[in-house]
Image 1 (cartoon, rainbow, N blue to C red):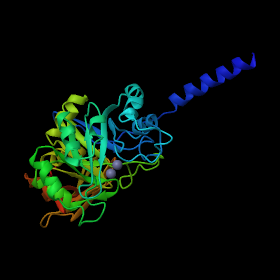
Image 2: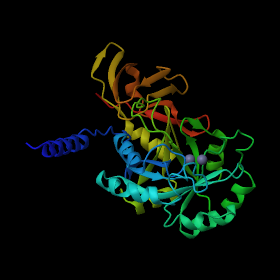
Image 3: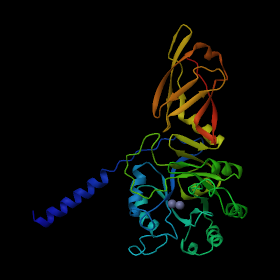
Image 4: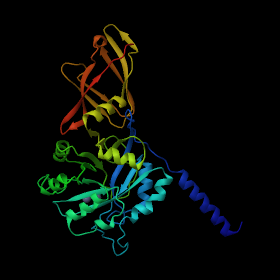
Length: 359
Ligand SMILES: [Zn+2]
Ligand SMILES: [Zn+2]
């Protein structure tokens, strides 16, 4: 075989194996009744602002890590590599789009509005054109986003410290104008309890993202160490349904070993994640049963009142064996617990009941 042809065949083989070698690790949070659970990262950077990867790499990473939706949100005003890669707002998304389609990922056009704190940083997603947002006046930028019917959220509120991260005049003004729709209560490993409180008080959408700048090295995949994502409960996997769900505040945030959300969504998620099996063995006044945990959290339960056992831990993707007093079978109302890492407010754990099916 001529050398050139061998090289060509080798290249083709390499290309083939590169595609086939891609493995996706699903993020397991079940769908809720009537809704699909979309795993979304709506805040990430590429070399088009201050990130360290090319846009298509973000797509591959997201697919491998089990995401359904990404928004590349490069800074509009901050581009340290401008001399190498000239300002081209929205170009990263354009480059990523084809690859996202190949991997069945939804990719949303977004940008990060970047100001000193306060007012701080905001993401606008579902834009049609980033260019009109490249303007001096902060309120004018957000007005431009609103004109495009964008979904706007306040990023990493407390990153410059709690004092500067407080809800203030800027947020209030945007909120009153109907131009602020969500708050990033988790950004990477940071959690902003005060912002969480504000989001609940003003009925804003709860958001959590990676804000990734470095390459994702694909080794962070434990319940405590993984990409921070927003779970969006959408009627279907389309951009229109995603948008509807975000404006309707049907989200939860998965960060470290915690899930933050509103009571109705977390209660439904707990229900979908935890499956109590009928007791399989009884001896005297004791009985044995298994509980399955179908989700990514190591679920920690703490008894309400004098329920026994006082604590139950259900490791992610596992079946746990439980020994209970046989008297629980008579309790029709179930066993009351608090799910310590299902947080419906800062330090406010979701109340749940474990219903024991008859053997
Ligand atoms: Zn930022
Ligand atoms: Zn950012």
